[in-house]
Image 1: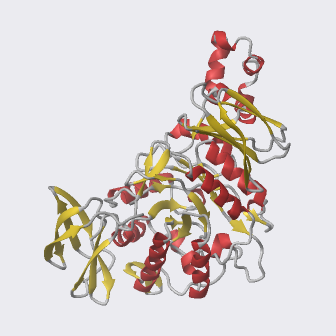
Image 2: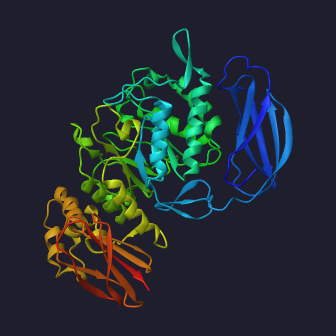
Image 3: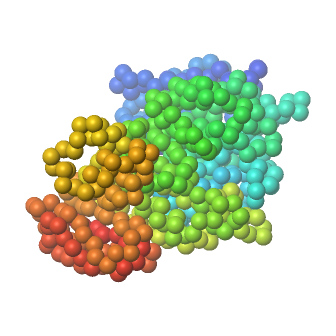
Length: 509
């Protein structure tokens, strides 16, 4: 047994009577008086397994009961070098269990595990060389444009011609686990989508009772995986079979049956999920308004990930034909405002193998630029926090209050402030979003400003008066970095090339 790695016990026994998915198998793991209770699962061929995720080193006493009875003890060694544990929220950001900062740079390959082995292997090889450390993928197969293949295995077997959630298809779950282990070996989190509406097989129409049986088995089997996030759905609001209360209940069930607290959220098509729900750990959003991260932070108080901001590609659908430059722009914008973004690619191919659905190889120009961004932010001492000052600190509600009470003394000569209090309420938010700077900091150690689509020839950044800083001008598309000032502080001006997509990084020397 090793800290932050899945530990497995295997036993032989008789085939369970009744449900294979809900086999009576329980286990307790105790260390220094603290006990973690888990449920084991039937793996087929009269094999039972119990999986445990040890979060601390030391001696664990374990006891298994039910269809199998056994006990023993195991020493858990400290984590191997480079193994950091599960990812959890910390404030408005994420970190591994050992305190290492985690910044999600995601991509989407929905039907990754439902392709033939040759294509899956090609996708995994591509991921091993890509800049992504999170992949969104589905448990159930997907039926949609450019994704019509029939998978080899499904999550369940059939009884009397209908999917039987009490009879898991063990070959499917073994194949899924193999891919999740591969991702873990590459340092990639699997953002596992539990339900989705793009279906021709009937999985989107499971009853609530069957949905809970399915989730129970999934959590027994995968709950000890260190590199998993739970996404209740992709586009939950397109699934007519489930109502709002159902999703709340499903979130509660997942959280209650997950002893390790994996990340959990729910993904929208139109209306955002209520991320204030206590079981929800972060905001998972489909939308293009990546510059609204500060507003979402204020509203929900949780990390914000734009898991779908449209895809780089050239297909007919407008969500799948933004340029590589626009994808890169959205990554930079979300990141500097204190949030995170997820990549997707939809370049048309005669064989209908598009990355966003089925994987294969990456063809676009954004991944290299996303790697460049990741290199920059991971060189910083911590996550980026939005500089909330000036227009960036104001809300529509504050402006409405100022209309009643008047401007504060320090703002009475500010023409923008004067204009804002005369503006109709419905226009205030848009004005603030258009005019506030895209500026972030890591304490006083580093400041990063992104000039977005401005084509200015002169840049400016205001730094603390104490300490000395080195300033680099960054071309986010050409992937260049050039030091333009050293040993400076206070308000500093510098030349820019008059083109969009420029940034400046000031690091304390």
